[in-house]
Length: 149
Image (cartoon, rainbow, N blue to C red; front, side):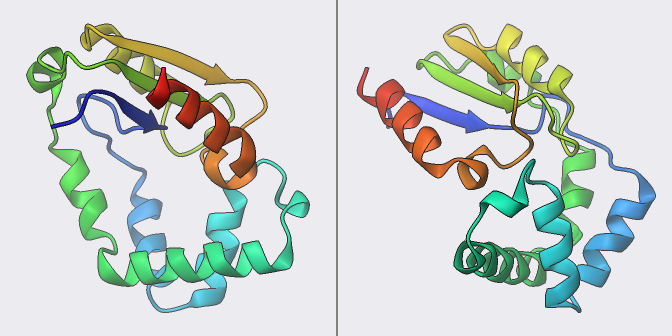
C-alpha cells in the first residue's frame, strides 16, 4: 500500500511502560488545557524559539488528543509486542529519534531499527521528542527527501 515510511520517535517493538505518574498526568491533562500546554511544550528542546501562535496550535491539538485518547493509549502501549511484525516490514523506513527525547527511550528506536530489514536510523543530537514541532522546516525537508528518494 505504500513504498516508504517515516517513524518519528516511535514506540519500540516491545511497547513502552511509563512511570505511574505519567498515567495520572494524562488524566489531569484531559481536564486542563493549560496543563496540557505546559506538558507538551516541555517536550520541546527550545520552546522559546516557537512563535506564540505555534505554541497555541500545538497546545490545542495536544489537548484535543489527550481528551480523545487520554491515558488509554498509554495503557495499550504496555502490552504491545511488534517484534515479529517489525521483521516483516520490507519497505524502506526512516526512523528518526531525538537524542534528548525524554518520553521514548532512544534504545527503543535502535532496537526497532535492528528488527526492520530495510530501515535506517537517524539520531538528532539537538532535538527532543518533537522534531516536527521544534524544527518543522528541517523535518519537512528531511521527510520529503526520504519519501522522494
